[in-house]
Length: 428
Image 1 (tube, rainbow, N blue to C red):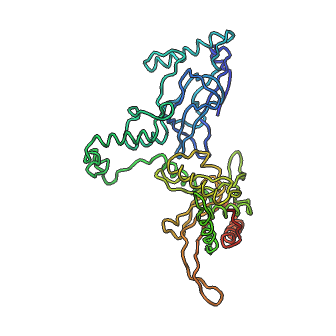
Image 2: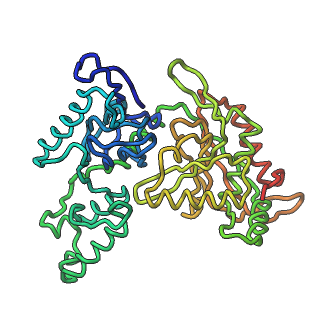
C-alpha cells in the first residue's frame, strides 16, 4: 500500500515527490504484523521492486518492496515493532541524481536525514554510506529465539551476510560442544526448572502468535451459522485408482488427498455455489472465488496452517501431488507466504492418519465449505440378498448457511459421493 503527495506542509521538500510505504492489508483477518527485518537504510538508493523490509503475521512472512525507484527518506519502524495495517513503514523520495538541475535543498535534505539517523545511533556516517544492518532469514530468527542464541554473535554466510538456518544450527552445535552434557540437558528437567523457575500448578503459559491466530479465527468461525452433512462413501473405486497411480513412475505419487481434492474441485465445478463466500462489507453480498483453489489443513509445530493448491480442477494427479508436497514442506518449514494461504474455495481436513473414523471440521473464515474425512475402514454392508465387506470412507461437509442452503449442500455431498464411488474421470 502506498500513498504519494507533495508535502506542502514541509517547505524544505522543495516540491520533491515523497511516497509513503504503508503496511498493506495482507488478508481479511490480518490487522497487524511484526517487522522482523529492515533491508535498507536511510539515504540508500533503491529500485522499484527491491525489498525494503520483511514482516511477519501470525502464520506467514512476506517482503515489502519498493513501489518506485528513489531513495529512502525515512524509516518509520524498528525491528520487532508490531505495526497495524495502514501505518507508515517508510518513505521514498525522488531518486538522487548527479544533476546540476536538481534543487540544492534536495541534497541538503538527504544529507540532513542521514546525519540525523547517524546522530541518533551515536555514529558518524557520510551521507552516501548506508549503515550496516544484520540480515536474518525469518526461519533462522525463529530458530535462534527457540535456542536462546543471540543473533548478533552469529556470523551469516548467506547472500550479503544474511544469517541462515544453517548458520544458527552451526552456532547451536558450537555451544553444545562447549558445555558439559549435564549442563546442556539441564539434568533432564524442563527449561523453567533448570533455570531455577519451577513450574507450579495454575501457571499460565502465554500463547504463541500462531496459537493466538488460531484462537481468534476459530472464535470467528463459531459466529458463522454453519451446518454439517455426513455421508458414508464406498471407497473401492478411489482405492483402485490410488493403486493404479502408484504404478505410474514419478517422484511424488498421488495418494488419497490428491484424489479427494480432485473430486472436490469437480464438485465445485458442478455446484458453483460452493465457491461463493458471504461478505459483510462494503455491503452484505456473496463473493465468488474465480480460481478453484483447495486448501489443505496441515499440522505443524507452529500450529494448524492451510496452504492453498491452485487451479485443482485443471491439475493432474501427479502435478497435484508435487504441488501438495511442496506446500506441506513449506508449511512445516515456516516458509509459507500469505498469498500461498489465501483464496481457497474449499478446504480439506484429513485426520485418517491419526486413526480418526469421522469428525466435523469448523469453517475456515473466508470460505463457505470445508470437507472432513477420517480413515478408510472395512465394513460389512448388505449387498443384494447377501452381505459383503467394502472399504468405507466417511465424508463430513460443513457449510456456511448464509451462502449455501441445505438443499445445495445436500446435492453437493451427494455429487461428491457419486464421483468417489465411480463417476469421477480422474486426470492423471
